[in-house]
Image (cartoon, rainbow, N blue to C red; front, top):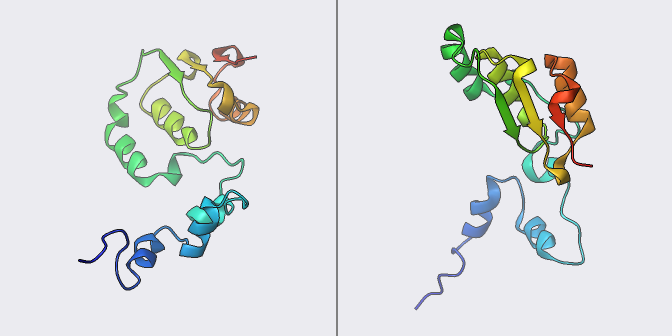
Length: 137
């Protein structure tokens, strides 16, 4: 009876090849004595402190293009309780293009992902008032 714990003839290597990592990298990530590879090496990109806009997310952009003329979020007030990470930039772009007034966006941060850089970028890019960001001390 064959063991089913690992695929045969390189199947394991093939199964992770789409992730852009080698079995050796995976092995090193599970070792307590080694640090994982940097995000750019593991995922094929590294945003660093960059906060992309809607142009970086074609599926979301297409969703918005199909609906923005109707401005379905006009008059809505939004309370966002989310991580302040770069991937939230396109989301905010989409919300505003769908009619949400930046002055009606309120953001409660999550302490371990609170980001001064993110908040400043959203204020500069969209005019979300500083007082609308509720920051954990």
